[in-house]
Length: 142
Image (cartoon, helix red, strand yellow):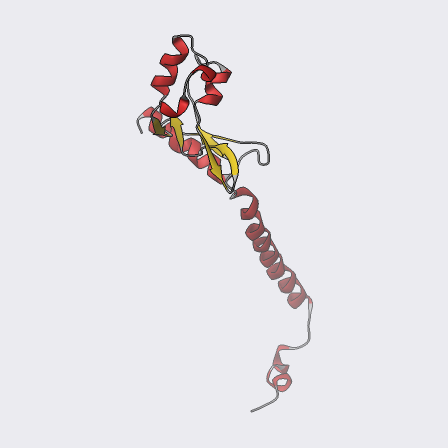
């Protein structure tokens, strides 16, 4: 087996072509590294809850229409369920306040109208953008 330096001697010394090629290839590798780090931030799933798409409800009823659940010992709004919007709308129209009604007796439903995402940490992420597009397609019949 011959020596590596002897085998590659015909290539010559490190010239301008080598230096240019070295920096161009490293620029590609560095940019892919940033892209790998980028997904950590834009791929995050922000806190969310079911959207209550009804402008006729008061703020009090809007907040009360999302049931609370315990997650990791902490009480927070449910991310996947809401109280039946039709029932909540009827109770609101009859003049009841959420404090006068036993909300746990109301039937819960899935997030029919999509989700509302928190912008407290991230303005928008892949998750929130895709889910909003899905929701608009579902509502428009697409």
